Each structure stands twice: as C-alpha cells, then as structure tokens.
Length: 356
Image (tube, rainbow, N blue to C red; front, side, top):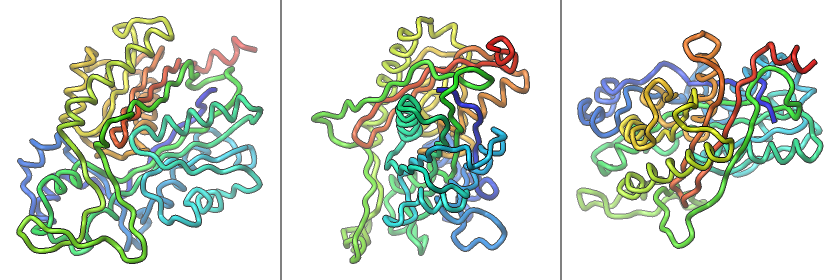
C-alpha cells in the first residue's frame, strides 16, 4: 500500500491558553503546566463564515484536500473509511453523509469507532481491502470534541480533571489517499501492527453515549447534582503505561523492518498532550530532530493526529528541512489499551521513473 497524498484540517483560529483563561475562567499558567499545549482549534456549531461546524464538515474538507493533493477524481476511489470517536449522528453514519458531499457513490463505506489508534485502524483496514483486489481508497480520521463541553460553559460545575481534559483536546481532521500500486512517489507502507493488549485491564479513557433521556444526574464537586460528564480519563494509568507501550511498538517496528531506531529519519510518537509527548520522546530515546510532534499547537485531535503528523512529515521533507528515508509511527489508545504502529518508506518522485 502506498499513501499518495495527505491532508489536514484545523477549524478556525487557534485558541491559546490565554484565550481559554479569558473565555472560560481557567488559569493560563495552570493550563501550561497541566497540558503542555499552547493552543488548539474548535469547530463552531453556530458558524456562518465557513468554519467547520462538526465532524462531518471536518472530514469532508480533509477528504477534498487529500483528493486535490493526489490529483485524482472522486470517481477513481473504490472505498471510503472514516475513523472517529465523535460522529455527528448514530444514523445515518457520518461516513455516508461525507461520501455524499464528496460526490462518492456505488462504493463500500466504513465507519470505525476509535480513539487514538483510529487512524492506523483505518489504514490497517484499507491495506486489507487493497490486498483483496480494490485499487484505491480514501481514509479519513476526524474528531470534534466541542460536543463534550457543557453548553452553558459553567466551569464551577466541572471537576478540575475534566477541565484539563477539555483543554488538551482540539478538533481536527486528516486524510490519506491510498493506492495498491507501490510504484510512484509517496509513502510506501512496509508494515502495520495493530492489536489489543487490554485483557483484564480497566479502561483509562471513557466517552459515554446517552439515549433519549440524556445524561443522568450525579454529585458535582460542590455537592450539588450535575449532569454526568461524557468523558473521563485516568491520567495516572496513562502516564504509567503509555510510554512503555510506545517503546514496545517502536522496537517491534524497527526489528520488523530491520533497522535501528537511531537510523530512522522521522519518528511520530503518541500525542496525548505536550507534556506527555516530551516524556514519551525521551523514554523512546529519539532525538528532537527525529521527532514529528504537533500536539502542543493543534491540541489532541484524536483520530486526525497521525494523519496530521504524517502530513507535516511530508511538508518537512518537501521543504528540504528533513531528509526522506524511513518513518515510524506509534500510537497508543488507552480506552481499552490498543497498540498500533506503522513503518513507511518515503519514495521520491524519481522512484517513479526508476520503476518504469
């Protein structure tokens, strides 16, 4: 499988920690210390000036940009995959509204509910579809977390852990056009690993989905009843387990493709937040020059983040600020402990003529 084009979409203007402090009554220095993120982007459900409103808007824009970057028509796409943890509706599936808006029809569509491992879950699925005889596909990862934030923005009703959780996330989307033909410019996938390691382990990330009655009432931080939050994170479990799991994935990828980590030009570590990203980088033993990290500026975009990292890797290579060569991607999903990774080889334009 070859990734022939990538894209990223970040809605609206960046929202800085100072903006968060002014808009929601948070403390700027506390946000700096707790998350390490400097900014993030949010959809605007009330937008009238073109800012994406929801996950479907983000996914559509990412798909359009990827198709344009690849220079291919929608009619050449054989399947569409959307990975997300924040669909716009249960039905119709968001992937099908996106397909309609992209002008795609008469093709299989897949919507995979995932968290941080979602992008690689989508690419893993795409690889199997291409191996089964399809020729070209579009894989999109998109998330919008605005819907997890209480509509009245009353921070007095929210626990500090939930505030930190909101501040570390951001909305975004990314996409890849994938092709069964390995000849030509782009990123050739050498190996993808994906497996659950969560047997007997408690989830460290939870996002609830409620029925017609909505969220139940639970005791709030001040003793009064509040609506149960949609999301929870076990930061201690994440901090204790994610760095080691990331090292396991990196070592396995390097051994599978027969290289040393120190010789890899681009390493894409898991991207929970800026603080954790730096801890993981050090634990992995990779240099800042090798590392492609964006979460401190984009926020944690969930299913979109690996696509955004890959897109920025290609921009770095194209700008001449980074050599080509090999790329190792590591993602860890703490929801029920899923590890995933991908080894890719950059193939420049000249390789197309060599193959001919």
